Length: 308
Image (cartoon, rainbow, N blue to C red; front, side):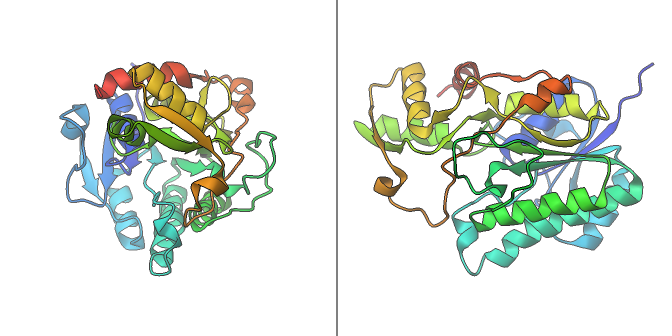
């Protein structure tokens, strides 16, 4: 009889953590969810997730992290919890909090993983790079130049994991969308309902990542010993946010007109955004992992899932 690993997932109130828990449930894993709330919260619907064990854990509190993880005794921690409000992270009164979550919280978890000898998956971002040029970023590239507080603190989390552990997966993703939370697709659908035209930047290039597809790959990963840095997004080619919006409206049957504008024309956001979010995923194939489906296919499935 095959013995499944026990998995602790952080950040289950978010898009990815929710889908990871669902995927673990489908595969009959013993999984425990955690987040900062006293019980499961922010769920889009009653699902298998809400029936699974849960521990409240403030990842910024070193003592609580140690107590919680030691009590669960997981074989793997999939660390999805993060501060992801990129613009708000730039506020002077928020920077310490962002660092406490993304860097300190990650270090706290890695320290306990080291003590218990368990695997760790850390979800990171293309924002650890400077977002310039047109070449796809390679997963083992160490030319880090984060352009905002979010990117800098996520990089600090990466470095803590790599420094403390040997059995880790650092998985960088971009342009994330999932059922359980806010995202670009939901925003564009809402805007498209009430506006005849919408302006969208066409000089920031990347590829979307559907958390449902990503969750499946992450669980595939933890079943191996193929540790290291990876880049994961859906297949289907590199696009701009403008291209993405056009396809969202096409598939949704909207006739909203999409006007391409430059980042400069659109108006600067508080946090600098990368022009180049191209992530090379060749390492996935080299290590025997199945790439994610195309983003066009993912979008079609997602629109059905959210019943927009």
